[in-house]
Length: 352
Ligand SMILES: *Cc1c(COP(=O)(O)O)cnc(C)c1O
Image (cartoon, rainbow, N blue to C red; front, side, top):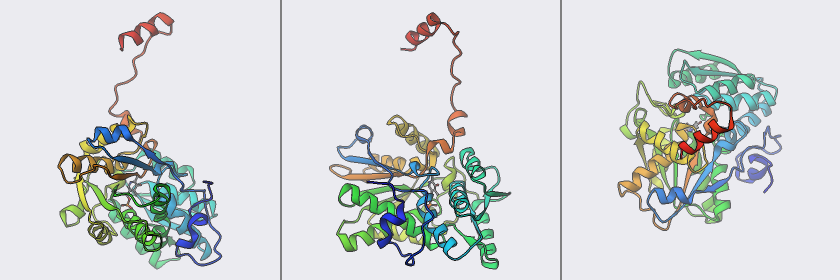
């Protein structure tokens, strides 16, 4: 499979006008990594795969949607784009907008954006504005600004974001030859779960690829779709899903229900434990991205999902390098050992 970007690869399945020139960084085509040892650990005899979206050009799945949103903004002649972000949307918007020669303006909640994301947005040349408020407040401001000016909104309220993001479902079906039995993924503003469901239903209608049951996973301190009401002060270590009032909440609930799945919440401890489990299988993801595995683990343990003989895909949405602090703030510092052979070899033997 060659890298051509999601628009060139799946254009016939995407609702984009003819002839628009893609703004692409050759996103998508991410690996579906088998993790048999992790399936064992979760206590089942089943096929478990990680769709590792952290391997997109800016380190998260946001690039799939951003290629479509920025392609359309450029086609319309926009000079600037704007978004609210917990971090990954900002980095992605900045990379694609700058590539297309546009300004990228991003509003982020003060102090709650992981270091690798903020650095990314700045490195790509975004104009970053912090507000002393939540993601939800930032989103309300950028929606208003985009309505009252000719700045293009590239949050997942922009329908082209979903057009791009649904291609991940196509890739999973193309790789497995059909849809998995379950798809597990984190849910924040709920654009991604909505996109996956669009993608699976569209593919199934034409290719009879089947439909997965969908397990959407929120963080317990930030679980409006589980509680049934908005959360004013969402809190979680999983900053990418620290969202109290998801813009596509209704669509997410609908996707979960129609698929015969559900949306659940897991604690921060469960999320961090799942992050460690994934890392011990060679896959380092940011905390939010571990929520799918945390949710699957909890559901299997509670007898709510019987994985036996099934094909299950967990979507790992963003790379671990996005949020180094979550690791370094909890680690014990490496031991300082004298720089000589005997001391180093004694240390290694002692460590066994
Ligand atoms: C954006 C994001 C999410 C949440 O996706 P939504 O579409 O907002 O539900 C989850 N994980 C990571 C790493 C993200 O960047």
